[in-house]
Amino acid sequence: MKYAEGKVSEVQIAYIGGGSRGWAWTFMTDLALEPSMSGTIRLYDLDRDAAEANEIIGNRVSRREEAVGKWEYRTCSSLEDVLTGADFVVISILPGTFDEMAVDVHMPERLGIYQSVGDTAGPGGIIRALRTIPMYVTIAEAIKNYAPKAWVINYTNPMSLCVKTLYRVFPEIKAFGCCHEVFGTQKVLKGIVEETFGITGIERKDIHVNVLGINHFTWFDYASYEGIDLFPVYREYIEKHFEEGYKENDGNWANASFECKHRVKFDLFRRYGMIAAAGDRHLAEFMPGDEYLKDPETVAGWDYGLTTVEWRKEDLKNRLEKSRRLLEENEEVELKPTGEEGILLIRALCGLDRMVSNVNIPNTNHQIPNLPADAIVETNAVFERDAIRPLIAGNLPENVKALIMPHIENHEYTLEAALACDKELVVRAFLNDPNVRSAKCSEEKVRKLVDDMIQGTMEYLPEGWRK
Image (cartoon, rainbow, N blue to C red; front, side, top):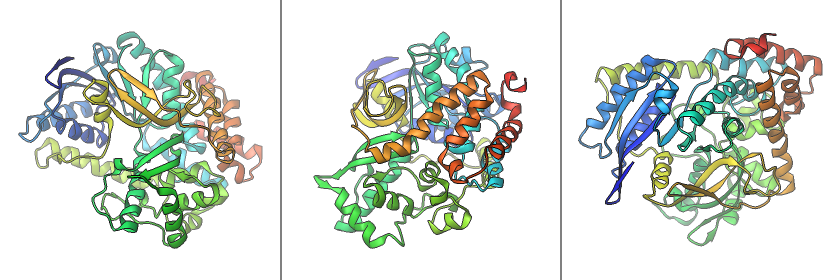
């Protein structure tokens, strides 16, 4: 990298999963709109054709007059090629296909176990992790060999286990997980403040919060706007609007499956006194299944949705069609701010700024003192030149800690199961999951489910699972 007059050039970013038909375009957009950085984006993907398509699309974006950040996109053929000399590594991959995800999400329904996302917690998150962890072992070893000093940004789910694997394989790695779920709850608070006080134009980042928890099961124990304590404001709003909830009107939802009225988080606030800070679809999966996920009718009653794999497959068709239009120049990537912070974090790590954002890293600095030091926790941190300094978030209340601990335990069971190809640890994780426990299934039925789900994802598992 080279520095001159408040700008940095020749930044080398390795993008593993660079054939993405979706998030890659978000990344291109934010890079194109950032005037203080330029350099090379190296794209690596097992689907080389997809990476080459994004090379064409990215270079076309960079040539546009309104693109103030200029980047060269280049497809690489190996992890060694993409990583050697990289300043930053971005990882955003899909472990397996949507056929495997159909196993993750829908096979447990035969035991009355419903999942609204299926990529982080519960049976779906555990089985998805079995596919993902071996890939991350390979990636971590490659980073250790070819880019040991690079900053590594993970976007793949299950977030906590991806980051945990990177540190298990390469303890000195400079890796962190990036997730925008917290932003959504800040936007809810922003909207409630605007509605309550008749204010307009509040920025999401002006809602100051203390973040603590684990990815997709984060909580706020502090929230303020210009000196206003937002907890009483939030409590009063919930008292008045619990039944109808809160509905955003920003038009950003791509489909009804992602919409919610935030009634799950409203209910969690009434029960636990903290602001649950993720989408209702994620929050529900960490709780006992008989509370918010008992059946599709219960889900509908809480005003959120089950994101089916069939919808995801249809969405992929739409994105593939969009990729074709972009390649044929029948459509352009829209250059407007996306609301993501990844590029801003890279900018801060380059020394061009200093900012606070939520981050997923090991709890080794005791950011949350009453959680294990080896847990991957999500808290705020200060980002500045070549440093992430986690902020001490404080202890979780014991009642919220009790909700989180089974999932932290399952992170350990699942990681060890994946590394050792140990089915008994997978069974233990299933039996320890609150959603599975609430279904009150026999151990025999749970074991059969584990067997069938492993078999359904076998194509993406190491040879050790076939023994």
